[in-house]
View 1 (cartoon, rainbow, N blue to C red):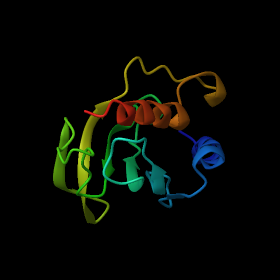
View 2 (view 1 turned 180 degrees about the vertical axis):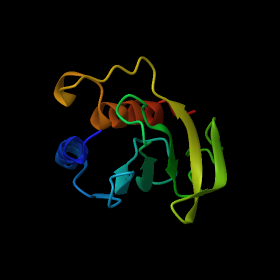
View 3 (view 1 turned 90 degrees about the vertical axis):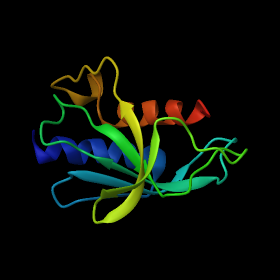
View 4 (view 1 turned 135 degrees about the horizontal axis):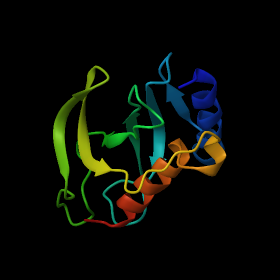
Length: 128
């Protein structure tokens, strides 16, 4: 997959999330202040997505947040495991898999990094 396509997709992400950092080969994305919906113990978190080598045919799998994320009642969310190693640090991993992933040769017409992040947003709205 071309680096140019990934750069175009990162620009889509920046329009929605502003602060998006990435690796030199765009193999990871870091959202410094990813907003969380009401119902969590904080309003925003760092959020990390690892982009697999086979992207876009292979979608990102899972996403990571800073350890300590809890529901407002103090419970840990489901499918969430703390103290996972990623990008040289310790993160909490949400087991999350893109459903019905269907990329296109034109990233604007199929699934892309933005559609993955919109699915992440929906997952975080579930509050479980």
